[in-house]
Length: 118
Length: 107
Image: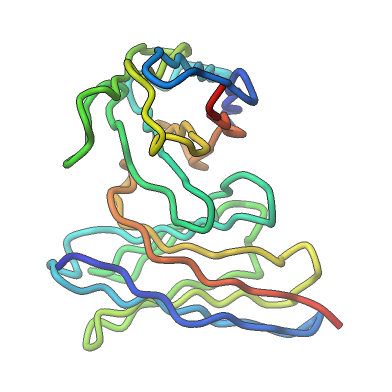
Protein backbone atom coordinates (compact mmCIF):
# COMPACT_ATOMS: atom_id res chain seq x y z
CA UNK A 1 0.00 0.00 0.00
CA UNK A 2 0.98 3.62 -0.36
CA UNK A 3 3.07 4.63 2.63
CA UNK A 4 5.89 6.75 3.95
CA UNK A 5 7.98 5.09 6.65
CA UNK A 6 10.39 7.21 8.67
CA UNK A 7 13.51 6.36 10.61
CA UNK A 8 13.52 6.01 14.37
CA UNK A 9 13.79 8.47 17.21
CA UNK A 10 17.02 10.39 17.77
CA UNK A 11 18.64 12.06 20.76
CA UNK A 12 21.29 14.66 19.96
CA UNK A 13 23.41 17.16 21.82
CA UNK A 14 23.27 20.87 21.07
CA UNK A 15 25.42 21.76 18.08
CA UNK A 16 25.16 18.31 16.54
CA UNK A 17 23.38 17.30 13.32
CA UNK A 18 20.57 14.84 12.71
CA UNK A 19 19.50 12.95 9.61
CA UNK A 20 15.92 11.75 9.31
CA UNK A 21 14.92 9.36 6.53
CA UNK A 22 11.59 8.81 4.81
CA UNK A 23 11.10 5.73 2.62
CA UNK A 24 8.30 5.85 0.09
CA UNK A 25 6.54 2.77 -1.25
CA UNK A 26 3.42 1.80 -3.16
CA UNK A 27 3.53 4.59 -5.72
CA UNK A 28 5.75 6.18 -8.35
CA UNK A 29 8.46 7.85 -6.25
CA UNK A 30 9.34 10.56 -8.76
CA UNK A 31 5.75 11.62 -9.39
CA UNK A 32 5.13 13.42 -6.09
CA UNK A 33 7.04 16.01 -4.14
CA UNK A 34 8.00 15.38 -0.51
CA UNK A 35 7.61 18.05 2.15
CA UNK A 36 9.01 18.16 5.67
CA UNK A 37 6.94 19.51 8.56
CA UNK A 38 7.84 19.65 12.22
CA UNK A 39 5.81 19.89 15.41
CA UNK A 40 7.32 20.94 18.73
CA UNK A 41 5.80 19.33 21.86
CA UNK A 42 2.26 20.62 22.37
CA UNK A 43 2.59 23.03 19.46
CA UNK A 44 1.31 23.41 15.91
CA UNK A 45 2.70 22.41 12.53
CA UNK A 46 5.62 24.19 10.85
CA UNK A 47 6.58 23.71 7.20
CA UNK A 48 10.32 23.31 6.64
CA UNK A 49 10.80 22.70 2.95
CA UNK A 50 10.18 20.64 -0.18
CA UNK A 51 12.15 18.34 -2.44
CA UNK A 52 11.38 17.12 -5.92
CA UNK A 53 12.35 13.43 -5.97
CA UNK A 54 12.59 13.53 -9.75
CA UNK A 55 15.39 16.05 -10.15
CA UNK A 56 16.39 16.62 -6.54
CA UNK A 57 15.61 20.35 -6.54
CA UNK A 58 14.74 21.84 -3.17
CA UNK A 59 13.20 24.90 -1.56
CA UNK A 60 13.49 25.69 2.12
CA UNK A 61 11.63 27.95 4.53
CA UNK A 62 13.76 31.00 5.23
CA UNK A 63 13.90 30.10 8.92
CA UNK A 64 15.90 26.95 8.12
CA UNK A 65 18.07 28.25 5.27
CA UNK A 66 21.69 27.30 5.84
CA UNK A 67 20.85 24.66 8.44
CA UNK A 68 18.72 22.18 6.51
CA UNK A 69 19.45 19.98 3.52
CA UNK A 70 17.01 17.64 1.81
CA UNK A 71 18.25 14.92 -0.52
CA UNK A 72 16.82 11.89 -2.23
CA UNK A 73 18.01 8.47 -3.33
CA UNK A 74 15.93 7.19 -6.23
CA UNK A 75 17.46 3.70 -6.00
CA UNK A 76 15.97 3.22 -2.54
CA UNK A 77 13.00 5.60 -2.95
CA UNK A 78 14.12 7.42 0.17
CA UNK A 79 14.24 11.09 1.05
CA UNK A 80 16.56 12.41 3.75
CA UNK A 81 16.39 15.57 5.83
CA UNK A 82 19.57 16.81 7.51
CA UNK A 83 19.33 19.50 10.16
CA UNK A 84 22.56 20.91 11.60
CA UNK A 85 23.61 23.16 14.50
CA UNK A 86 20.84 21.70 16.62
CA UNK A 87 19.51 23.63 19.59
CA UNK A 88 16.94 22.78 22.23
CA UNK A 89 14.23 24.57 20.23
CA UNK A 90 14.66 21.96 17.49
CA UNK A 91 13.20 19.30 19.77
CA UNK A 92 10.13 18.18 17.83
CA UNK A 93 8.46 15.45 15.85
CA UNK A 94 9.56 15.66 12.23
CA UNK A 95 7.16 14.46 9.53
CA UNK A 96 7.63 13.84 5.85
CA UNK A 97 4.51 14.27 3.73
CA UNK A 98 3.63 13.67 0.09
CA UNK A 99 2.26 16.59 -1.85
CA UNK A 100 2.48 18.73 -4.92
CA UNK A 101 4.34 21.90 -5.80
CA UNK A 102 2.48 23.10 -4.05
CA UNK A 103 -0.58 21.11 -3.07
CA UNK A 104 -2.24 19.57 -0.03
CA UNK A 105 -0.41 16.73 1.74
CA UNK A 106 -2.31 13.52 1.08
CA UNK A 107 0.03 11.09 2.82
CA UNK A 108 2.18 11.52 5.92
CA UNK A 109 4.95 9.51 7.52
CA UNK A 110 4.50 8.32 11.09
CA UNK A 111 6.83 11.00 12.44
CA UNK A 112 10.32 10.93 13.97
CA UNK A 113 10.96 12.36 17.42
CA UNK A 114 14.18 14.34 17.63
CA UNK A 115 15.27 15.38 21.10
CA UNK A 116 18.06 17.91 21.56
CA UNK A 117 19.46 17.85 25.06
CA UNK A 118 22.80 18.18 26.76
CA UNK B 1 4.34 35.15 4.87
CA UNK B 2 0.61 34.45 5.01
CA UNK B 3 -0.66 34.14 8.58
CA UNK B 4 -3.47 31.65 9.15
CA UNK B 5 -5.68 32.30 12.17
CA UNK B 6 -8.05 29.63 13.49
CA UNK B 7 -10.95 30.09 15.85
CA UNK B 8 -11.97 29.11 18.37
CA UNK B 9 -8.92 27.56 20.00
CA UNK B 10 -11.14 24.98 21.70
CA UNK B 11 -14.63 23.89 20.71
CA UNK B 12 -16.90 21.81 22.96
CA UNK B 13 -19.72 20.07 21.15
CA UNK B 14 -22.27 17.48 22.22
CA UNK B 15 -22.35 14.17 20.31
CA UNK B 16 -24.57 14.43 17.26
CA UNK B 17 -24.38 18.21 17.19
CA UNK B 18 -22.79 20.38 14.51
CA UNK B 19 -19.24 21.69 14.90
CA UNK B 20 -18.15 24.76 12.96
CA UNK B 21 -14.44 25.66 12.76
CA UNK B 22 -13.11 28.86 11.21
CA UNK B 23 -9.86 29.73 9.47
CA UNK B 24 -8.84 33.18 8.26
CA UNK B 25 -5.91 34.06 5.99
CA UNK B 26 -4.05 37.36 6.23
CA UNK B 27 -4.35 37.69 2.44
CA UNK B 28 -6.19 35.83 -0.27
CA UNK B 29 -5.20 32.20 -0.81
CA UNK B 30 -7.88 31.63 -3.47
CA UNK B 31 -9.17 28.08 -2.88
CA UNK B 32 -5.75 26.66 -2.05
CA UNK B 33 -6.73 25.67 1.44
CA UNK B 34 -6.57 22.28 3.17
CA UNK B 35 -7.87 20.94 6.47
CA UNK B 36 -6.16 18.24 8.50
CA UNK B 37 -7.22 16.19 11.51
CA UNK B 38 -4.66 15.16 14.10
CA UNK B 39 -5.39 12.74 16.92
CA UNK B 40 -3.02 12.40 19.91
CA UNK B 41 0.16 10.57 19.03
CA UNK B 42 -0.71 10.37 15.34
CA UNK B 43 0.34 12.12 12.18
CA UNK B 44 -2.10 14.59 10.63
CA UNK B 45 -4.61 13.24 8.11
CA UNK B 46 -5.89 15.17 5.11
CA UNK B 47 -9.64 15.85 5.30
CA UNK B 48 -10.31 18.62 2.78
CA UNK B 49 -8.33 20.10 -0.11
CA UNK B 50 -9.18 22.86 -2.54
CA UNK B 51 -11.23 24.40 0.29
CA UNK B 52 -14.20 22.09 -0.30
CA UNK B 53 -13.15 18.72 -1.77
CA UNK B 54 -13.14 15.74 0.58
CA UNK B 55 -10.06 13.56 0.50
CA UNK B 56 -10.34 9.85 -0.23
CA UNK B 57 -12.17 7.92 2.49
CA UNK B 58 -13.30 10.96 4.46
CA UNK B 59 -16.90 10.67 5.76
CA UNK B 60 -19.54 12.92 4.26
CA UNK B 61 -20.19 14.58 7.65
CA UNK B 62 -17.01 16.61 7.03
CA UNK B 63 -17.42 19.55 4.66
CA UNK B 64 -15.39 22.61 3.80
CA UNK B 65 -16.38 25.97 2.37
CA UNK B 66 -15.00 29.41 1.64
CA UNK B 67 -12.51 31.13 -0.62
CA UNK B 68 -10.18 34.08 -0.51
CA UNK B 69 -9.54 34.76 3.17
CA UNK B 70 -12.42 33.11 5.04
CA UNK B 71 -12.87 29.36 5.35
CA UNK B 72 -15.02 26.98 7.38
CA UNK B 73 -14.81 23.31 8.27
CA UNK B 74 -18.12 21.81 9.36
CA UNK B 75 -18.68 18.49 11.07
CA UNK B 76 -22.41 17.97 10.61
CA UNK B 77 -22.94 15.44 13.40
CA UNK B 78 -20.04 15.06 15.83
CA UNK B 79 -18.94 11.50 16.57
CA UNK B 80 -16.67 10.42 19.43
CA UNK B 81 -13.94 9.51 16.93
CA UNK B 82 -13.86 13.10 15.70
CA UNK B 83 -12.17 14.29 18.89
CA UNK B 84 -8.91 15.77 17.62
CA UNK B 85 -7.08 18.95 16.74
CA UNK B 86 -7.91 20.40 13.33
CA UNK B 87 -5.47 22.49 11.31
CA UNK B 88 -5.98 24.59 8.21
CA UNK B 89 -3.13 25.12 5.76
CA UNK B 90 -2.67 27.42 2.80
CA UNK B 91 -0.70 26.25 -0.21
CA UNK B 92 -1.19 29.29 -2.41
CA UNK B 93 2.04 31.08 -1.47
CA UNK B 94 5.51 30.15 -0.22
CA UNK B 95 6.22 29.44 2.55
CA UNK B 96 3.31 27.10 3.14
CA UNK B 97 1.71 27.97 6.46
CA UNK B 98 -0.63 26.35 8.96
CA UNK B 99 -3.12 27.77 11.41
CA UNK B 100 -2.60 27.26 15.12
CA UNK B 101 -5.28 24.58 15.34
CA UNK B 102 -8.73 24.10 16.88
CA UNK B 103 -9.14 21.41 19.51
CA UNK B 104 -12.55 19.73 19.31
CA UNK B 105 -13.76 18.08 22.49
CA UNK B 106 -16.95 16.39 23.65
CA UNK B 107 -19.26 18.49 25.78
